[in-house]
Amino acid sequence: MYPKTLNNLIESLKILPGVGQKTAERYALSILDNDMEDVAQFAKSLIDVKDSIRTCTICHNLTDQEVCNVCSDKSRDHNTICVVSSAKEAFSIERMNEYNGVYHVLNGLISTQKGILPEDLTLESLLNRINDQTREVILALNATVEGEMTTLYIAKKLDGKVKTTRLAFGLPIGGHLDYADDMTLQKAFEGRNDIES
Ligand SMILES: [Zn+2]
Image (cartoon, rainbow, N blue to C red; front, top):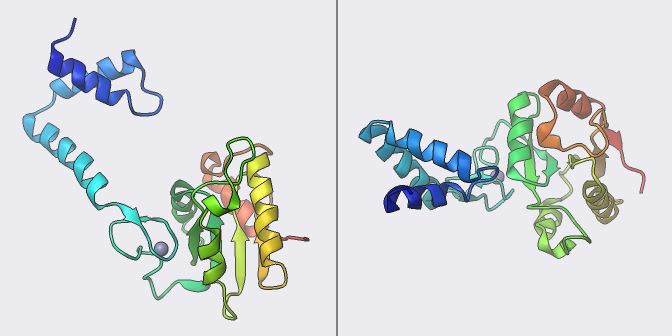
């Protein structure tokens, strides 16, 4: 039986995805092995991230400012908008170092199964961002049923308003964008297609 404080830490660690009792125990004991200074820094990072991270008022990506680095970067092409379902995917694309446009994070995908409706996403704010200057909207959503449903829904909304493309799936069907390796993602980007709607 662990002492109460250690047990509290084990319980806290179990809120993380993929961390069960065994792993939580291992993590908790390894935290005990670290210097006080490192542990204090670790605790501070946890609080800081929760305290300071919010969503960009323009693109809804994660940021510690009002407007994210990408949206406030004048050297980027603000007339090309890449639509992704979550911040994690925007970071995957950013890591390629190839894309110079801006993003729009939907915060999910339309799902009849999970009861996620178009109005639960940041779609209205996407539609409000699009104007005469907008050159292209790239729909970079997962090759899953939900990704497909969302892609078609948005393509229909944007039909006649702006050139809308989707990634060429090189990505395997059923594939999640954030699991694609950089090369596959880059190919999918280069070979993007117009959407017929
Ligand atoms: Zn932004």
